[in-house]
Image (cartoon, rainbow over all chains, first blue to last red; front, side, top):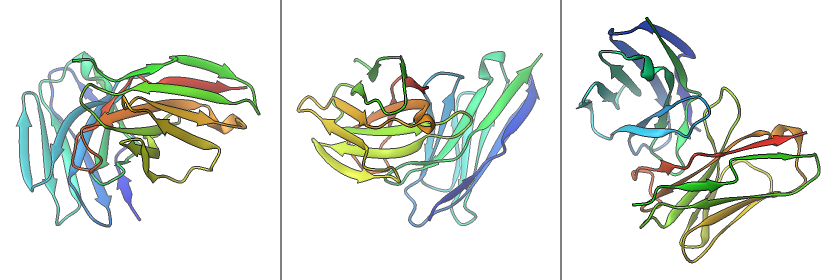
Length: 107
Length: 114
């Protein structure tokens, strides 16, 4: 079976840095995806990690440790528009999503 | 390049009715996956179509069925609607059916069953 855990909610201040953690247990592993989903909208792709380490893409970075079954998404210089749910998903067929972490950015 | 589109955007049905949701995949993509997303939850996999054949199915009853057409667009049909079917239905297209290929989501269809 597959199990993915993420915190339900997080709050952070505009301009700050926030780290959203994701732990997973999966039979077979083909990498880990992060998606952003604004309320009432479709998920949009943020990152994909298949090898251990940190991948940086502008203000967003994603880290993977396969041996620990652990990933995190790091958001820097937070902006109000970053308020959204962040979903991690194991890159198997099919994608298995966590429940998402709802991030609120406050002034 | 045209992204993934879905229709309709919103739909209200009553228990026992049937519904058809439609999805046009992104140009060049031959794989379409359908997901159900209840409020406050992550998307749950319903099934995937690859080159007009079903290529995997999640834990959904047979009253959830689908089709993929030669142009790779797809339909999701739900019979005998139940209140718990109220959700956002998302389709996602990708270049191939492997889990390593990024899936791009459409805007979703919000289904309300009364």
